[in-house]
Image 1 (spheres, rainbow, N blue to C red):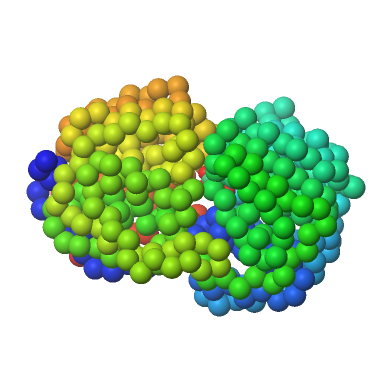
Image 2: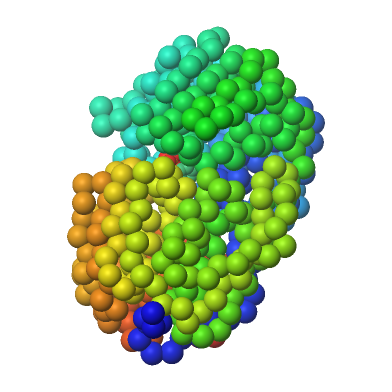
Length: 428
Ligand code: S3P
């Protein structure tokens, strides 16, 4: 297998990617619901996490400015105040869906709003379980935002999700936690498990098996002591870039390797990449390691479906981009959820790849990309979607490509320093 990128690209050095976005949201929320003062280190300071901080402040929680070391004093699980204004979730689905659960369980009433992208995203998936628990959730006909949530005395629930979704699972668990009732959530396959890990690390009684998680009634949370791991979704862009490079050697420090999140690294290895784990440790209930990514390897196409999909759901646009430089065909199915992310990520990634000159087709629930080592030219339409901007940002660094990105600033949602880090490791 020869390395497939055209020309020489050196990717080298060390990188510390910013804190995990999913864990950062949960850290603020769980700290706000705990009894006492939590310490959170290395929280992601990005637009999405600012949205969660802003919503918690509007509910009367004193959240200081996001900082590398910050303290949050919680007032216990039912101490939220009714907000006087709309809860603005910006672009963040995690904020809207997790906080809908908190508001319902805390017995207050609130109206959730967001930007144009978030306002189109499906909220019936949280409406149904919250109403089954006894909350009132009103949505417009299209099922998105604005969403009115009115909490009350919620009841215990056993909820079976038809799609794996950590946002739905966490919404139900947080509603039950705030209301002091019991909840069981079943999923067709396991979604990211940060909420249950964090609740357990704060002393809550949580029971987990392969397809279900249960939170017992009347749990209280001790303060959180957490160093947020580096975000594996953010590290994935650089794992992909180094795997496509002709020479160099990249070390990404302190990356979260929770197995419900690390599917992209496994798939990249299956394609022929070399990603070695060093200094693996367990901290605050999460697994963290340094990733050493080799260059000059050459990649082959891969098939991804089934239970693997939730473990790399946010990395699938990046996989499609990498696949254009892998020998043979890459096929992804069982990923219809991609159509309801920050953009329709199936249509958007395939349209952009084709527009630039790659060979790709949409499937109803995924995509096919044939690796042709294309020389790509044109302007990517991101639809304001941070992960599209960064996935094509990786391709823009490959020699011979002339790719512009229509909205480079949208990376602020999850990885504000992305372009600076990209320039640094490529020496450009
Ligand atoms: C997230 C869960 C996933 C993921 C999103 C973050 C979370 O969404 O795509 O970026 O933090 O719980 P779903 O729950 O909709 O699958």
